[in-house]
Length: 114
Image 1 (tube, rainbow, N blue to C red):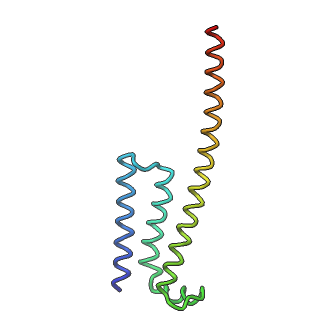
Image 2 (tube, rainbow, N blue to C red):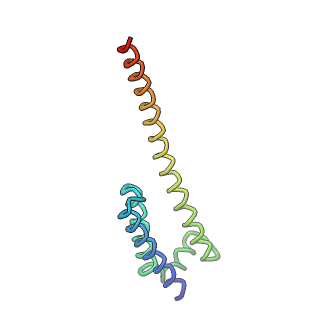
Image 3 (tube, rainbow, N blue to C red):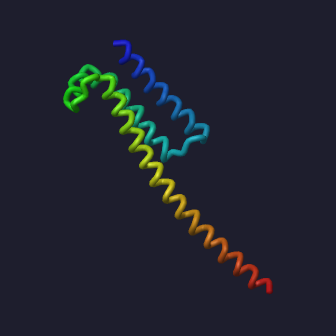
């Protein structure tokens, strides 16, 4: 099937791109793990699960099978957005704590100068 070949090739491109970004230090190892798993799942899905795709679409109640791919893509984006929101919240909290510590250190430094 032509769609199967395109999906497999796309997953290989994502895999190679993620590895290149990690090697150039443009993508963190933590986020790269997520994308590597995604690419591996795409490769497995296109090579092993693609023939059963129509059954999966019928099982989840989708009448038009390409819509099931769209649904899966939306679910993936929702999960990834949730993950990034959690990471952003943690970084925001760390930033607040570091700002408070910096203010205290500046206050101490000014008091020691006096």
